[in-house]
Structures are given as C-alpha cells and as structure tokens.
Image (tube, rainbow, N blue to C red):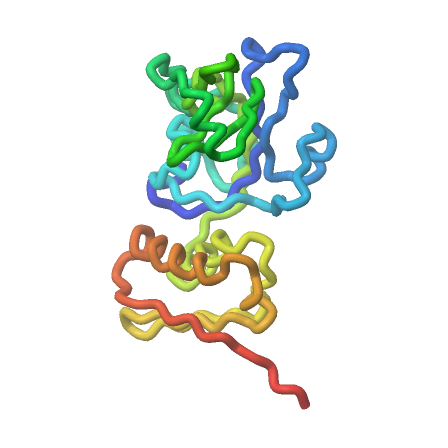
Length: 234
C-alpha cells in the first residue's frame, strides 16, 4: 500500500471508457510513453515523455485514480476505470453559455465549432456559432467521461534532497539538469544550476513555482537560493 502524501513516479496511458467512444474518436488521449503516443497518433514534439511525478493528496491527478494507486504497490502494473464523478466531474449544464460574437471579434478570433478558446480567464469549447452569438462549453474537456487508465508505479521518492530535485525537474521538463547540486543548511536550500540549464525557457518563472511547491510539499524551509554554475575553460 502507498501512503497518502507519498511522492511517486508513474507511467500511465489514459483513454475514454468504451461506452463513450465513437468511431471518430481516438481511443487513447494521453500517455507518458512515447511509443504509445506515436502508435496512437497523439505524439506531441514539444511534450517530454517520461514517468510522471505525483504527490498523492495534491490533486495533480484525478482523486479516483489517487485512491486506486494507494491500494497498489511499487512495481505494480494495472488497469483501472475511474468514473466521471471521481475523474473530471459530471457535465455541468450551467457552464454552457452564450457569448456575444463581438467578444471574439475584439480579439480577432473567428470561432469555429470544436475550437478551444480563451477569453479572459475562461477557456471553453465552441459548440455552435451564429451571426450574433457563440455557444461555449466551459466544462473540462473530459467532464462527464469515465476514463480507463493503465498504470505502472515505478518508485517512491524519499528524502528532502530528492523531493526538491524532483520538484525542480517537474517545473523544467526536458531541461538538462546534469550537474545540478542541492545543499541544505538548516532551513535554507541552495541549488546550483548548471550553465546549460540557465537558458531554458521559463526558467525564472519555474524558480518561483519551485519555491511555492517546496512550501506546500516539503515543509520546514524558509528560503531557497538558486546559484548559476559556470565551467571555467582550461
């Protein structure tokens, strides 16, 4: 059994449960495994395919899936079905709204059925378009869907240094962090970032998010300092 609050690494493949699948829909909609993504024709060049970091209890994955993982052990590979109520929730009719066409025109957007569009802080799917109004669905794209998962539990992460290292890697997916070092001095964390990682996109934003993650997941620390490490040519 895996305890609540554990930091683990998993591979997963997710598909809409068979009762909700039509011939036009792809069966698998997400996976951490590159070979499966290519085979199912959902491969994304900008996505990093590797085991996913999960902290149980932090709502990084659907709560129904968390419950099933807690009943398993490291090394297990299993299938499970998560009903919509424990996945992304039921479809909420109140989140289907009519939006004036002029709101899209202000942003130079020409909406079409099926488009995912963000206006302000809301992102929704276009259901229909008329000359004056657009019918939008602001439910999660998987709301109302039961989901089948295939899960492999690879490892449980232990120790504060490893927690911090994994949280940094999560915020910088695909970055080469070889040579990164972490020192813990009481309540202070010092991270030396290798030169080749300092140019990674969004690295400054990622640092702030790492500090937030540590405060929520690895309590007891007051500050984190990021130092950039440069090799001196010889």
